[in-house]
Image (cartoon, rainbow, N blue to C red; front, side, top):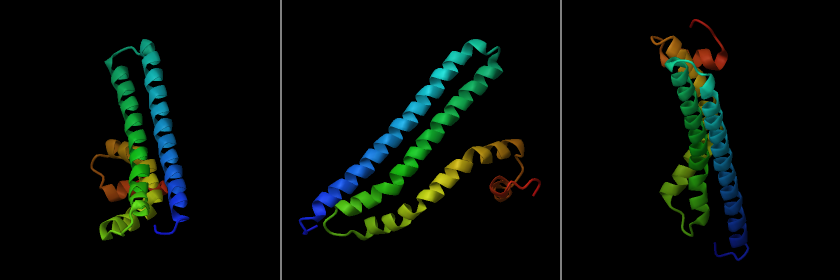
Length: 143
């Protein structure tokens, strides 16, 4: 960071990642707010406690999914931003950067299949997690 041209680049990259993170948080919060409002509007059409419980479970699942997506974004870019801002390189920060940064797509993949895994696990409680993952990923039935 002794180079005078490095600081503007560092600030620009940091600002872009921060803006992306804020947009991600805002988007997920907007989705959660919409789902919660829609669920509250639909309460008048719910007759019985089973429908109310199901509606609350769906709302909760949406909020959890949005939080997990935001956390995946945060954990992916947290250590690279710290590494950019450090004058001296820390072994721990470099190691965490090399572990978490390449896993961004993997986190998104896991979060994308998570609802399907939960559904299969609910429908087939005795099935091993490996079989559930194979069924969800490859759309294979009865493994």
